[in-house]
Image 1 (spheres, rainbow, N blue to C red):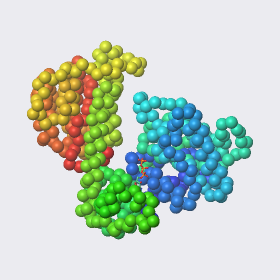
Image 2: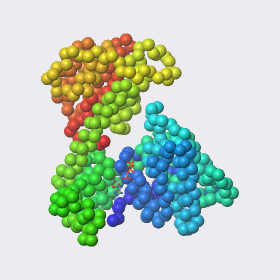
Image 3: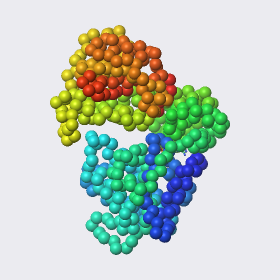
Image 4: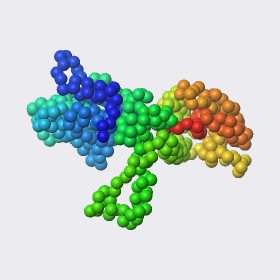
Length: 445
Ligand SMILES: Nc1ncnc2c1ncn2[C@@H]1O[C@H](COP(=O)(O)OP(=O)(O)OP(=O)(O)O)[C@@H](O)[C@H]1O
């Protein structure tokens, strides 16, 4: 099947790779190309398509190989794979690249709670070292005086800010932020459905119905269409015999007729997937609620990169909210006790309330700390600029706050709603938690 590759993607990769094989006079070429962007937008997939189109060899590494119980192993493996690629060029007479997928998952440091291991340090150091001396990459225990072929390295990832900053600097890594525009999306999704002969206007309509979804989503929709026939096959053969029929059979492999590729059916299947994403998201919100309650209050941790960075409440402020004895000027990073505060339980919690228990707990938590509670809302457009409106502020009485929140959620179902705990002493915003997101649109996970 011939897939679509974005021309911008081909251009960036082909120029980077070719440039690394040329001897440009007095030009220092970065060895690493970092392709970063949202998950599931086709970074790795398109890299492979470009390599295939260029007819070049690839040596792959993945995030999982960048960590090991034995310190030093991953860094050694990076060197080994790099040298393998250099050897390939020599033997096969073709360009080769070293491709490291999802590097931030293996060598990145997400926050101060992610362990920065010896391996993380060594992998970052090794890549820096290779970027600085690409023709002199040695394996431990031996020294090869002969120079080796310079091999361009392509890395993909979601958030390069988690990588060691000197590795990402311009002389070592050229950066390419991959965010498909509508034309790219139409081309790529058209490629996914090419064999099914979907009309261009149907593809456009499908993309416009799910504008926030990544490319990966549309591949999953296509795959889901075959489920009905597979279910039927299992029923016909029997659950106990399906294994033999599929894996170890003298019969011909089962055949499937083209499923229903009509636009309404695609949208129906897409909506099912969105519902499942939402369930995952809801679970994650609950988990984050619990985690953030005791550890940190970074609003950006919900995975929604559109949350403005200015919304971040610093951990120290949060802990200070729980421990007023902490010196407000101290920045010594001393670890606060990880025990939850004694939140005053709100005795009048109405059993008839429609609010989720987490929302009630959040209200209790804020009022229990003696803070003023503010309910703030914002529509989807203004959410990106962080222009929240105050719905109301409440003090002391939990019942009033609960009924106000109920009214707010009923009145503004298409808005983001957050609860804010404000210190009465200095009016600082000590806690901010988004407790509701728009239900009308598909918010991608
Ligand atoms: N050009 C394309 N043509 C057809 N399908 C594509 C294309 N690009 C991406 N896809 C589909 O999207 C899926 C996700 O792509 P890929 O794994 O490359 O995303 P990614 O951006 O690297 O994601 P992550 O950051 O999560 O690793 C692929 O498995 C494939 O099904």
